[in-house]
Image (tube, rainbow, N blue to C red; front, top):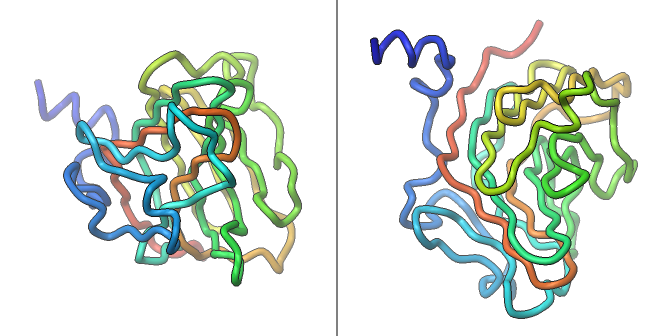
Length: 203
């Protein structure tokens, strides 16, 4: 029965590569000077602060680059007006704290949306259904992001929220994955159970 349930939940949950060991930041990097904005605690990577303002957007990036993949993780935000996200197919902006690329957004009013960070600076695509707008909940949320060729899909708690196909041929289809804590009032973004399954490049 257990094996059947794992199969029904999706092979990526069983056969993905873990990107976080639950104890350290191994495999991830933070920009110099921002180390104090990130920590590992209680089996989660936590960005931001509940006691002081987050001065600017800050990111913890993967050391490896990815193209086509399915990424699963759990995300939770706490505090006043929390805002965070998961960067995909992204790059660090030269001599700057910001990143450029797609962001699977996190936070009230933003959960499950695809934002183009520091590039077009807008949400890409629309909600795929009425249920998508109500997919998030308080506490931990299951997030799944699938990138295959020019198509990007996002699920929150099993509900498809975004199904976007890129039309701009100049937009890169590979890049870094990063966890974001947005600038603003005191808040924290927590990430755990981070797994990725690389897919064969789309033809």
